[in-house]
Image (cartoon, rainbow, N blue to C red; front, side, top):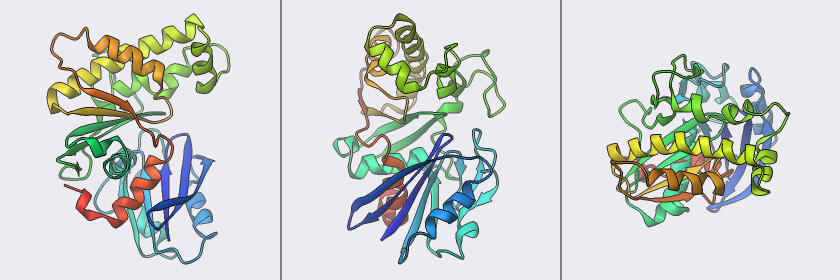
Amino acid sequence: MYLGFDIGGTNIKYGIFENDNLKEFNIVKTVDGRIIETLRFIIKRYKNIEGIGIASAGLVNFNNEIIFSPNIKELRNVNFKESLKDLCQNVKAINDVNAMALCEIKYGYGRKYKNFIVLALGTGVGGAIVINRRLYLGSNGFAGEFGHTKISLKGSRCKCGRRGCLEAFIGRNYILKSFSQNLDLHDIYKNAKKGDKDSINIFKKYSKYLSIALANFVNILDPEAIILSGGVANDIILRFTKRYLKREKIYRDVNIHISKYKNKAGVIGAILYLKEENLIL
């Protein structure tokens, strides 16, 4: 029995993985400053845990250390294995979107493709690169930070400290700050489905920025497919993004999907990283 965590800027998702199946899945709110405390509290609820896989937003190296997480102040220079070693000796950590990509390789749309990228649209924007059905992590484990590629020389300051990052244009807060009312993403999505013009226009603008970035990634990596994941990914954004991509001058058509494992992919992938080294390039 394995325990998997997916730590994001808004929620911590966790679940029990047994006999290649996710047996239990839960979500709690992320409270910056109490994340390690929350993990320890959850771990203590379970017995006979063989290993703990952790997927986290931010730069996670091969030593299970999260070096920097723009949206979570607590997770800077934190070693997950050291922090949890008294509860479990078998702990491995990986970036959350890289974990999502492992889930896609094993169980999702990634089974159909040899080369693809995953883009997670949520509080931040993260990415992962898959080459010949194996996850590419780079020399330090930091590959795929697509959210911090620049799409403009201007724009709001990103939480990483730079201006013009993709994340500053399409992170979750970008959508929410566009409305004066106190709405959550689910409300905005429902309103757009009902035909509300303001909500539709926000998703249109979002999709335009996203299409600029995707065209760049396609031209650099030449993937067969792009898989969108995360809490912001939806059918409206997918439709408008495909429309804008067709207007790009240097771009070839690729398959674009929304992950079937949107909420659970990070948890499953964290366990796969713990168990299946053959999935890593």
